[in-house]
Image (tube, rainbow, N blue to C red; front, side):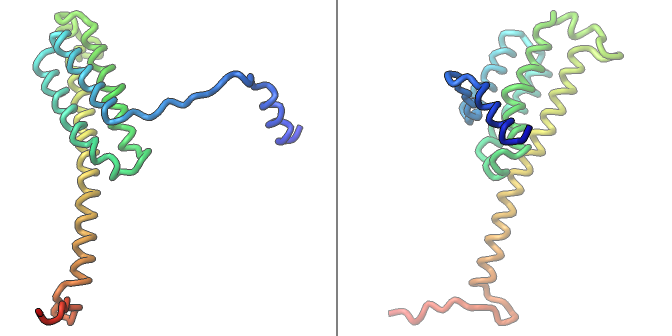
Length: 173
């Protein structure tokens, strides 16, 4: 059987009434809404301050990164990580912890000598460090653009000791 006949057979087996719809990627508003839902979970679940402060830090970093994510390139790994952290990783980590009874989660070891609270804090610290690195990368992209533009303008209009090009506007009228 050849490749053409295989593709033809695939087309014949497909139900003509069935449409495949690819969901649109999350927007900045979707990401911010996901962060607001996590904040609401924390309030309702009476999370300890150590958890709240870390989640607030992560949410702030994500909010600062969102407008700059375009600089990292559409579909970049960093862009995906920011969106996934806000919409999946952070909500899942927080909700998993909050489903447990507070006293049990904060005092009973579940992984070696680590309690659920300690595991959540470690997870939040990892997410926070990762979001910080991505924000730094986005800011570095802007800084590199500024350096390149500055060097271009210096080469074009700068006054160099080595006889660089001078801007001559003519005599005033």
